[in-house]
Figure 1 (cartoon, rainbow, N blue to C red):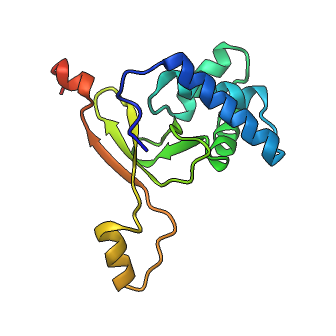
Figure 2 (cartoon, rainbow, N blue to C red):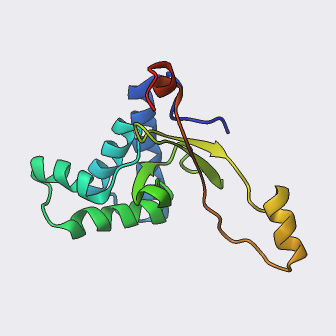
Figure 3 (cartoon, rainbow, N blue to C red):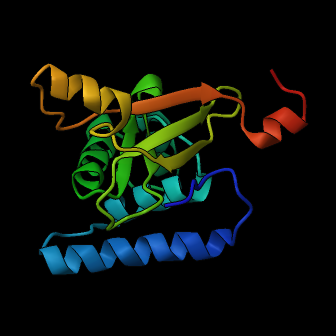
Length: 160
């Protein structure tokens, strides 16, 4: 799994692929991809950065898809449960999953200037954390790894 988020790529293609993967998963799992859920996923795929629920709600409101916070929170909750989005704890925000349908435990590389997020491979059950957990008799079920720094674009532009 390669990091995604800071690389130049065919953006229209990744949006289309993300939506197609989500719709196929929903058909297979027997869950419903409502218009609001689909639009929330599209918004996150379009932006390629972490977004808070209220920022997403502002867009939904402007598009006539809902104006109450539960609209955005319910859609985000569904998308997270299905593995289409990840919650970025540090920012209290969400980002579209770069590898939908894959069983993975990503680490998030967060640009502190522009809030773009890259998803990189990580497995907390391995490495030093995994070893410390094993020595303590602890079984890691979920770990959130978030690194904060500057993305390549912000470094080039001298933002700090």
